[in-house]
Image: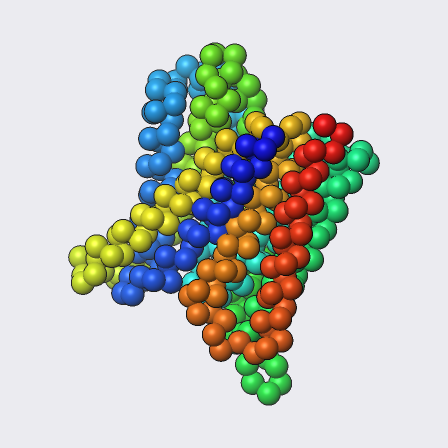
Length: 334
């Protein structure tokens, strides 16, 4: 259980760091960065992990329940649109505010929906503590989101720029679609059960779930990036000056985010019977904490007013409290 909590926190660390390099690439447009990121995180890394841990995955694919395979592919494809919206929201809002809004919705829906789908939603001591942690987590998200809005407020009337409004809408859409990822993972768990019966470890079998979900999720992302590159004529930027810096940072983004997914897969088997509802908010809470700290280091809060900074600090403190409560829920009744 302790190792599961550690893996979930490390997953959140990687997740919170992955979008920061996007703000450090000087000349590339969003579509240039996102395409390399998607190719690395959703195609290359899952294929390598499955090759290392499973080898010939055709047997597992053939033996796994068709409903689970279809769920992994279908929900992964749907999540791909949420990934596009997240990337666009970070481009418009910055690391802190985009992560606050997206993770807020994703954590609430991604934690509660698996319990409902499994018929495990009942008032037991462990779940009561878990719900308390989720509520505390959402309060922290609200505080961080409010801090971001205060930071972006412009003009005497306290209005928010149109670019920020669009980014917030993208974030809301991404948060809803991102929760689908955890729902799809929950429905695809019979694949991992089949893998164990075939002699694979649960971690190895779970890697095949990620391959299905991420590969199908990459399809809308790649198509959209290619469309933007053709429309904006940004393909030649790959051969422009500082291309090596852009390539390295985009690949780093992919490795960090891909690493967060595989660490999450290593965490859930160690977190008990309601693992997706414990590991998901725990990982996302750590991700949001790290993302807000990265926002500070990137100077996103340098010109913010004192009230916005106070909200941010209180939000981070609340998130830390939520992480402690959610981690404690794994010990209740154990």
